[in-house]
Each structure stands twice: as structure tokens, then as C-alpha cells.
Length: 169
Image (cartoon, rainbow, N blue to C red; front, top):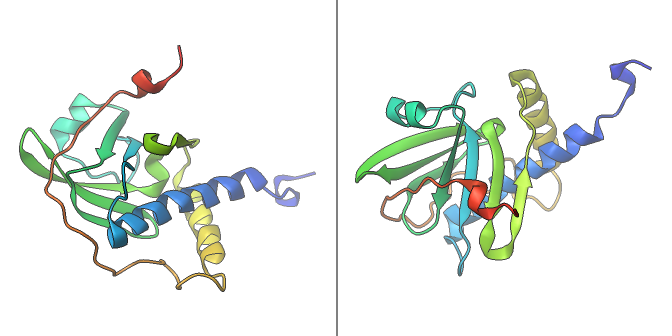
């Protein structure tokens, strides 16, 4: 049996779960973060398409975690990437992160976390195509869901944390 003969349910599930990340962020754009919700987003800093300042890439080679909670601005979500402005040492910085670069997405307020396997560019394209097909269902507002809607703007401040403090020892 060749790879062409196998339905890759693992890839389909991972693609759908990356859609959960995207849709969660779209909800925040439209409605803001409700209650105690906040997101830890860990991403691969050397992933193609990641745009972060060089000093952050130098400080966090390989992987970085950002927190979206009280202070962030200009959150934008597209099919293939997210963008957000955070403040590092009181300097606002724009980050662009491909959805495929995200390795962990967590909302500790409700004990929710997703961990993803690294994927390559071809997998990203096929996963995003599959996700687009899933998004075109009858209950959806259309491709991209909340694209183009304006949400609350918040002041910018960022925090980078190690996920080790959340891991059971």
C-alpha cells in the first residue's frame, strides 16, 4: 500500500486543530478576551515566514512563547498567519507568525492546550487547503470566518515565558 492509498487522518485532525487556533484568535479580534482567558502561543522562530526582530530571534533561537492577555494590539488573523503587536522593554514590535509555525497553543484559564508536530511548507499548503474546505461548511460565515472585522484595540506589552513552569514534574 503506497502513501497515496492511505487517508492521512492524523494530518486532517492536526489541520482542523490549527483551525481551532485561528478561530480562537478571530473570536478575540471580534469580542476581546472574555473573563480570565489568555493565550500562550509557542512558535518556531526559524520557521519560514516568521517575522520577528533580530534581537528576539537571537534571544530565543528555535522557539519562543508569547502571551496574549491584557496588553497587545493590532491582532490580525489570516488563513496562513497571524500578526500582533507586543511591547518588549517598552518598545512596540510587530510579530508575524505562520499558523504552521505554532507548536503549542494554550489557554491556562480553562486548562486547554494543543501541541502540534512541526510541519514543512508543502504540508502547510495541503493542510491549509484542507482547512479551507472544512471552513466552507454551511454553518460558517464564509472563508476566513471573521476576517476583516475590527476588534478591541489594547495597549501593547508582551511577556515571554517558559512552559516548563506549567509542566508536571
